[in-house]
Length: 202
Image (cartoon, rainbow, N blue to C red):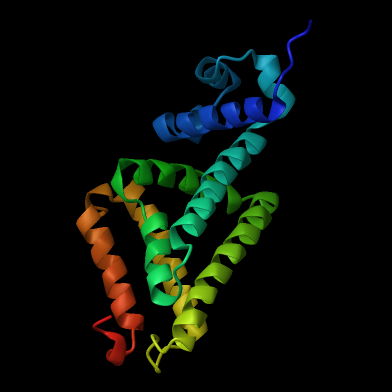
């Protein structure tokens, strides 16, 4: 009886292998030979699922992005407003070694997306979704009286999104600055700047 192949499982396994190679060696070192060695599959099996390097990078990016999104939803379940925003930032910022490693995948994708309209569009689509989640938490904070009266909602969305993206870059290019203490202090300062004085003790 022929062996039944779980194609979703195999695709996920290859994606994990690509992600590991990018973290360890960088995207330029991703080759079918390297992936075959990492995943334990023949070249032909890999090409069946991912015909070129762009599809491999896209799979790795989505693996990281969607994984983070699922963790954000799980971590913020039952929370709202600035509490949820702080938990979201805690998930997105590159805490611990794994956080900085994931940042390498993100930066590799950003580099290619800046030069490729198809990758740019894909990235834009998912970043818009993330900005909507930030906007939701800020809107809840406004409704709950947590947000300072002086805060402009769209400016705050940009501020939070830029901080999250900036720390991804810092974790790779200036790793000594991305300590747990500095990352947490950055989140605390951001929230303090958004919070209404009357809720400062919450």
